[in-house]
Image 1 (cartoon, rainbow, N blue to C red):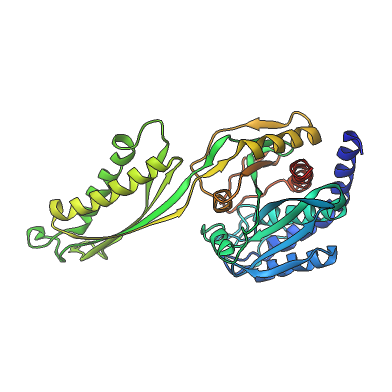
Image 2: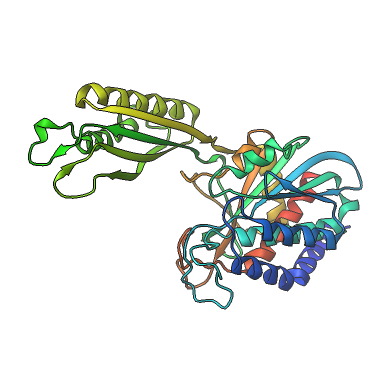
Length: 391
């Protein structure tokens, strides 16, 4: 089959199934499910794979689904992963297919991702004689809490994988364009809980109490120096306090204050430095402010690193299918637990433009609405990439 014939076949096949994929996406969008609750969504995925004649297993990592397409001859195993979970956000779009469940919304486009991978499944099933090895279709739960990939891997999802592809809709790229960042493209994500215990007392007599609010405020100020004075300037890092809880009223010094924070890094050295510094600051606070500190520090997911040996052929495939539509971008300090797969096999994470004309959308907001044309574009790009990686 000539290259231009392959381009035409993928385009025409993707165009033919696009309406059905949009319908699936809208159904999933109207019925969002949070992390590890994706039973209905997993049921839709399983039903579609059954309809396509693709063998699959369910219940991987709780609510995950894995389908397998065998190629026409022996070769490596490529995993393509889509996430399925929604966010605890109340939708405000007003669309006919808006969320029917208060406080839950597909505000990150995982409904788009699920529909896209089902489209890839349909095309690759028909093209199976054309590629070597096999494709594992990984429909993952609980990405938003950065736990679903690890749960699936614990159930064997990464066994035998030689290569892996991830993808995400990208609203800051117009629909029809694609993006990437070389090397470490998404940050490691760690988090910590710090409980600071003082001594409760009357606000009019602070000398008779030990004020945990003042101590916590000192910690918040000091922890900003971790990035500015301890991490190497060429190693990007972010330390953010996301919750500061303590006290009940105007004139009582409380007994305890609780802080929650996140640490994002692209390099292991910065990750180690930040953790050690936060532990040291918490310990020092006990001496300096006379409080008791209890720190729970958790390393969640590693940075997501794009491997050249996967990235180069995928980008070549996208350009072969669409032309000059690929934009090199910067790394993000956001995190993605596809990095758990990428830590176990050479991988690449593709950004698929989903920005609708005339809109200035952002992920994780109550009005988010990606351009649904990104589904068909993603199907074409990922199908062509799989054929390039499994020649």
